[in-house]
Amino acid sequence: IGTIGVLTSGGDAPGMNAAIRAVVRTALSKGLKVKGIMHGYAGLLNEEFIDMGMRSVSEIIQRGGTVLYTARCLEFKEMAGVIKAHEICEKNGIDGLVVIGGDGSFRGAQDLSNVGTPCIGIPGTIDNDIACSEYTIGYDTAMNTVVEMVDKLRDTANSHSRCSVVEVMGRRAGHIALNTGIACGAAVILVPEQDFDPERDLLARIRYAQECGKHHFIVMVAEGVGKAEEIAQIIRDNTGIDTRKTVLGHVQRGGSPTLRDRVVATQMGYHAVELLTQNIGNRVVAMKNGEIVDYEINEALSMKKGIETKLLEIAHCISI
Ligand code: ADP
Image 1 (tube, rainbow, N blue to C red):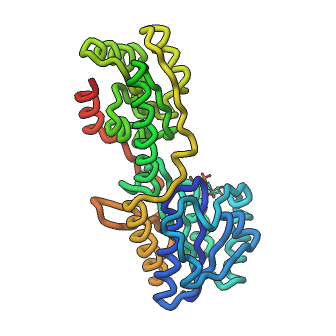
Image 2 (cartoon, rainbow, N blue to C red; image 1 turned 120 degrees about the vertical axis):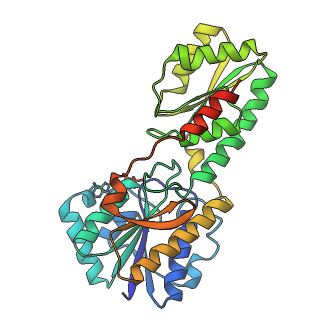
Image 3 (tube, protein in one colour; image 1 turned 30 degrees about the horizontal axis):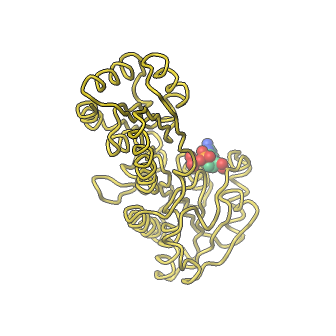
């Protein structure tokens, strides 16, 4: 293997730059050449390549977003697009590819590996919703952003004896809501992995907290459970508590990556290049019991990951 490509795809996440940097520097130090591919698979199909040297990744480890930009690309979902991408790789001497993204991006990486360009996936998404890995790049930064924002909301909710409903990201996964809910002392945490019964899961808990003397409340809702405004309305209608909603939205995707995201991104980027140098493709890099491991993409995509049940239990016990 002589030259590898690196791209970021799907939703961006803080720490993607640290992963790009690790991929580039590891590859160069092992005597490989590296092409940065702009705008994900779309840029691959348009041959948007830049030659990466040791200095092309200077000053990016601390930056959020992705210097290679990201995109969603419909053409690449079709077999014709995948074959075209493989031909472009061959024409440009790209012998292997590192794809930093989520499950959708890994499906593309699997297809491309199957037609002859070995690809390695690195999990980059703030939601920590990639089943094969206990950690995804961006997760820690996103949660720290939520905690910082909710601490500010808490001050004002407290001053006015209000309830603050905070909607955080997570359509199918409640990891952000659960962990930040605990860290922010939420009275109620709602995650999509559990059925939501307004009386049992929301109103009863708020009334109980009220009986215990609480006069301001944080309700942490993962977006997959429902809209913050609807949940705020249920609280207003049934308790009379002055309730405001805040939808944190895309602030959660930005910002300078935390130490954890930088270090994990570096470890994963290094591991991805090590696999490619051994001519191994069609794999996803993952974390298991704190160690960096890898799985065949097909196996990785068929794995399941649940919410941390013990943590939910703890949250219910202490959120009063
Ligand atoms: P994420 O990687 O964050 O899950 P997406 O699901 O949007 O984000 O996927 C990113 C890109 O990966 C898509 O725009 C598409 O180019 C490619 N992709 C997604 N699903 C597939 C698929 N089933 N087959 C091939 N490529 C896919």
